[in-house]
Image 1 (cartoon, helix red, strand yellow):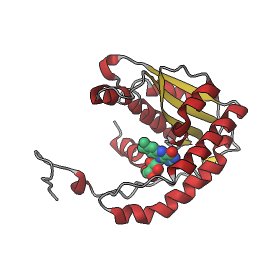
Image 2 (cartoon, protein in one colour):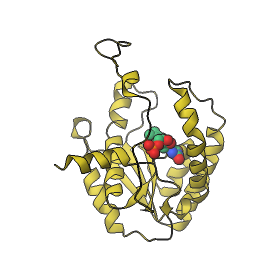
Image 3 (cartoon, helix red, strand yellow):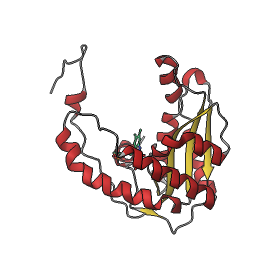
Image 4 (spheres, helix red, strand yellow):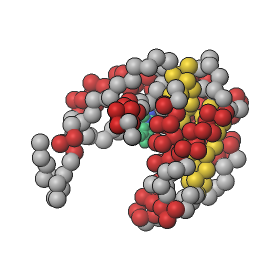
Length: 216
Ligand SMILES: Cc1cc2nc3c(=O)[nH]c(=O)nc-3n(C[C@H](O)[C@H](O)[C@H](O)COP(=O)(O)O)c2cc1C
């Protein structure tokens, strides 16, 4: 493998919001190509209970975008959890907020939404089932995002419309036993200047043998 290219892909696949090119059409075949790669991802017991809902219908996209906007109103009222390296997140917050607002106002313009779905509902089920259910769709979603980025397509991992998951299911005809895990607006991105992000340093979040035992 060409490690340099693989590592570049893995370290520069960002949430693209302001650089989505809403005016450039995307061929459905390209979305299918990325999904073909996504279905190589692992699933618990190889169950492959996933479904991928690709939305290009203008009215449906607008309705989902409206749910997303309403979800964002609820989200901003939620208390944010304290995290280590709060400084880093505080530094990054204005940029993330600005670009999130841009997406909020424009997401209906993306040629496609791809919604990653998994069979089963996890409310009130044991942790094992919850972890196995989400763990059987999130790797595919990330693979899709990587495959898309490698083909010039940008996307942003979003969950905010899930404040109104039922309403979205109604708009899209999703059955009651299906869980929506991620919605990605997809469009070509502009520019090719994605960089590795600043993250909380690895040594602060890596524990060796016992929780709290960190090495620098
Ligand atoms: C579980 C999850 C939920 C997210 N939900 C949203 C969302 O609803 N809207 C949004 O604009 N970004 C959302 N994001 C994107 C994050 O804000 C983003 O990944 C983070 O700021 C780091 O930026 P990067 O992806 O460019 O590295 C979500 C990411 C994850 C992993």
